[in-house]
Length: 262
Image 1 (cartoon, rainbow, N blue to C red):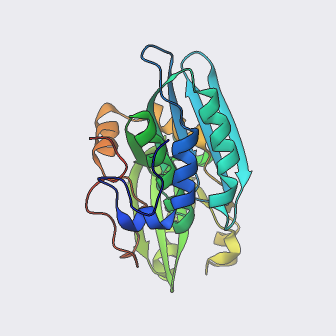
Image 2 (cartoon, rainbow, N blue to C red; image 1 turned 180 degrees about the horizontal axis):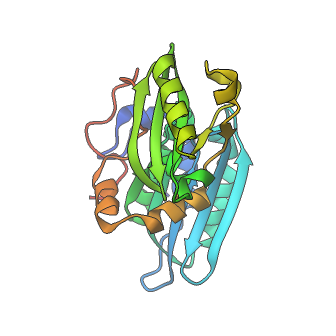
C-alpha cells in the first residue's frame, strides 16, 4: 500500500497534491500493477464540461465508455466509473493516459488531469493532454467549424478546427470580435458550436441562432488522437499536462510535470 499521507510523492507539485488528495489516493489504490506481457490499453478522460466521460480503448476490445453528469462534484462522481475501467484493464498493459485540457471548466479540467496523472504514476505510463474542443462532434467536419466560449469579465474566445485539427486558437476576443468571427464562419458555411448556450453570448439574433451547443466526449478525444499527425502527437506528449489557460491563472501552474514517470 502506498503512503497517501499529507506529503506529496517525490516530483509531485504540492499545490496539485493538496487540491485533490482524496481523488489521487483513490486512483492510486484502484490502479493495479500492469502485466509484463498483455494487451495494451489507453485510458481517456474528458472532464472539462459537466457532461464528463471516460473511455478504455483497447486494440482488440474496442471502446468501453462511462459517462456521468458532474457539475461541481467531479471529485466524487469520478471515483466509481474510473475504478470500473481500471479494474477492467487490470489484466492489460496501460500504454498511456489521455486527458482533455479544455478550454472549459477550470476545476473540472484540473481534476481530470490530476486523476490522469495519478493513474499514470501507478501504471508507469505517460500522461498526454490534448484540447477538449477537438472532441466536439462538429470538430470532425472537413468543412471546418468555429468553437466559441465565454472567457468571463467581458471576454470571449474563439478557435477554428478542421477535421479534428486545430487551425486557429483558442484566442481571446471581445464582443465585437466574437460577432465578426461568427459572421465569417456562417458566411463560409461552417458550423458554430459552444459548450455553452447561445444566450450566453452578446450576438445579434440571426447570429445567435447559428450557435449549436455541443459537448466533448472521451470517445471523440480518442478519435482526435488517432487522427492527429505524428508531429502533433509528439508535441502534445512533450508538453506539460495542464488546462489551457486563456488568461493568467489565479494559481501558478507547475514548473515541471508532476505525477509523471521520468
